[in-house]
Length: 220
Image 1 (cartoon, helix red, strand yellow):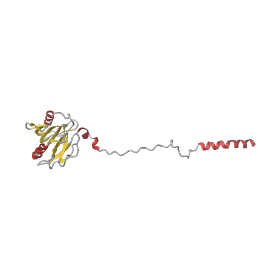
Image 2: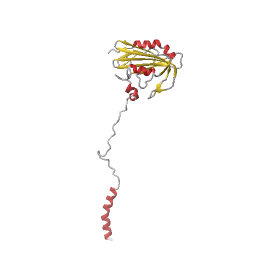
Image 3: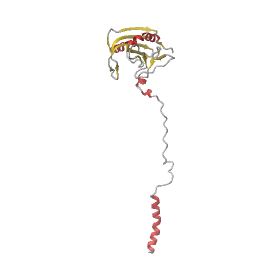
Image 4: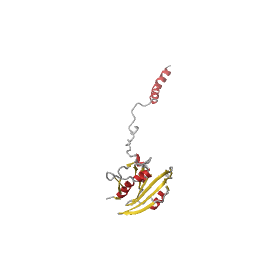
C-alpha cells in the first residue's frame, strides 16, 4: 500500500504537465506571428474608354472652341444642326446629319490613325468607291489650301454598308451618296467620310461645303 501511495505522488506532476500541453495557448501571438495588414488598393479612376480600341488607334479630336474641332494639326467648324454621336471604334468623332425626306440620318465619320498611317489618298478613294454599286461615274478632285492638300470624291448608288473586322457588307442600302474628303495635314492624313440617303446628303450640300471651306491648319 505504501508503495502505491508513493507511486501516485510521483505521477501527479506528470499528469498535470500532459494536460497543460494538450490545450491551445491562450496567450496573444508574438508580433512576428501576427499577420501583416493587407495593403489598401486605391480604386481605379481610368475611364472605360481608355481601354477601347478607339483610343488606341484613333486619337480623340479636341474642341478648340465652341462649334470647332481639331486633330492632327488641322481644325474645322462643325455645321449647326449636326449632332456629335457617342464615341465609336476607329473614329475621332462621328456627326449625325439631319434626315430630309428620308427614314434615317446621314453621318460624317472623321478618322485619323497617326503620322504616316491610314494609306494614301488614292488607295482610300478606291476603297470607298468599291463600297458602292455606283449608278454613275464618281467625281474626283484635288486642291491645295495653304499647306494642306485636299482630295475629294463623290459617288452615288447602292451602299454596301461595310462593317465588322473584315468590313463585310451589312446589307445593301439603295439610293445612297458618298462625299469623301482626305486632308493631308501636318501630322498625317485626316479622313472625312460622309454617307447617307440621297435626300439627307443633298439637303446638306451647303453644310458640307461650309465644313470643307472651314478646314485650315491649326495655329500653334
